[in-house]
Image 1: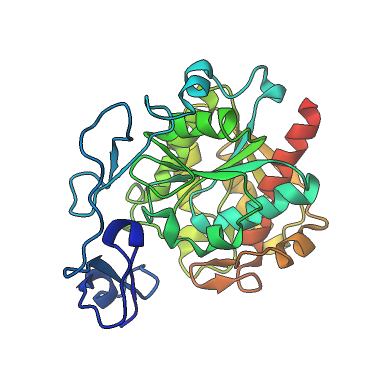
Image 2: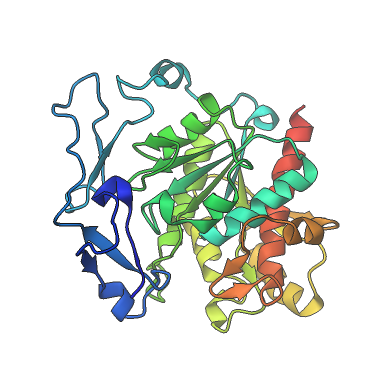
Length: 337
């Protein structure tokens, strides 16, 4: 069977090694990309970490209290060269239009189209990605991040997620790191690959998007919501505006955000989206964005465009809605200039 090994956790496997595998999710057909995972290479273990949690080494433990917990350097702890900037940064920006736009999405698959939308309007915009811990915990699992190397100014892994350019204890410190350390003009927040859901009103990891709205607003940023819009999902609860977006923005979020819809939706999809969007406003602002040129931006994305097994043509408006959110974030930069 195919299996993934993360060398930073288990060392570098070689041909002929015996390996201990975790195959549970693979055998159950759950969302692990068709892979088992290497737990250990028992005959050749990785080097021990430095001993002692002192000022000379990072001591932020992630995937805590599991056999594969990993120890890294938090961006704001004593040993970090970035600690002075983190201590000095108290917010993401100043007045409303001068603050940093932060685009929020509940699925990792929204990252490439959002970035394409930002760069369609502002090709030189400095964009950071904050990866939350609702899906895959290692950033190394993301093919999108590999393909987007050079397009992002950096990746901050927040909470239990790890493996980014910077490690953060929580979403708040991750957002500040994106601004103060990576000097981002726009930040995208979404969970890693994969998504946990139980098919109930509250049982899905994307509910954290509403909490992200609150965090961005509290820190002085400008939250921009990427709505999960589809006319291709076979599940009724995800047609039009997904119930995930309706719950996260409509109930969990306690601060207002700009929620973006494509202006040119086909009539049948618009008939589903319009009444759902009306339920979100107020407190949120519904922003209809012109999508002219975004199709070309999506088709030239270096990262694969796939969501729930569907590509660009199969779920076109999902990707266009995400790109429209990115375009709106870029427009906010222009307004604040």
